[in-house]
Image 1 (spheres, rainbow, N blue to C red):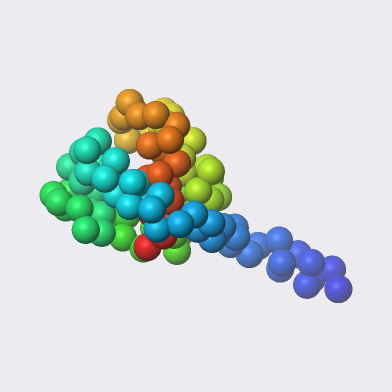
Image 2 (image 1 turned 90 degrees about the vertical axis):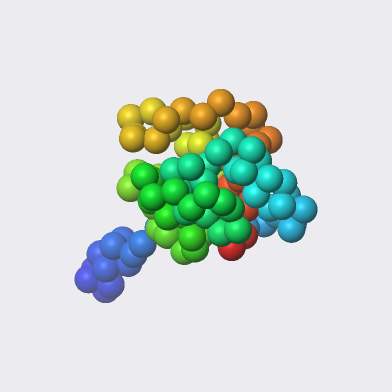
Length: 108
């Protein structure tokens, strides 16, 4: 029984499902385009397809954000607004834009 509990503790962090509608995800795609996220990241349906940062294709399938935070929309929105301590520059955006971009990336 103890071994089963220990193995369960090693599971990947649960990825939260996208709980938002398509309209919010569409706003997120528009925000990502306007803020220039594609300059560094390859993102679905966004041009350019940057290669400086990691590809964000199928982002919702990842377990962690920047190797630090469980991949949930709320954590992603917070990271987008304050990515200090990582190579990603801080991009000025509103909380609503960050929430929408998180919905877009989690809705893929």
